[in-house]
Length: 141
Image: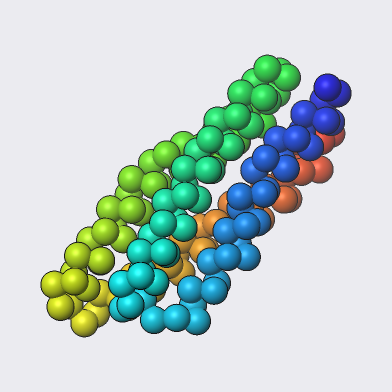
């Protein structure tokens, strides 16, 4: 595979789950998070997103390493590291709010909504960073 082909393949591998999350996550803004099945579905979507980004990030970083692009591999590796660390941190916060909601805390759905917004913002920042890096990664061959 040509160096540009590797860059394109890695970017597609990363952009697909990030794009899907960008399109799917705003739908939860239209529903109340104090409804248990909705909140559980939101939790599942975040959990799946972190797991997919971990796998995609590791595959992308390895592909760049094998292609000899150390800086690009470090950038994609950072995305994988954020997905690995971020999943543990983020899911713990979501679970805390779900337990608080189940215990009768009326503010827990609002805190869960803030977590939802922060997760969407984090994904958007990484997505913008990834898209803006495409020309630099494609030329670095």
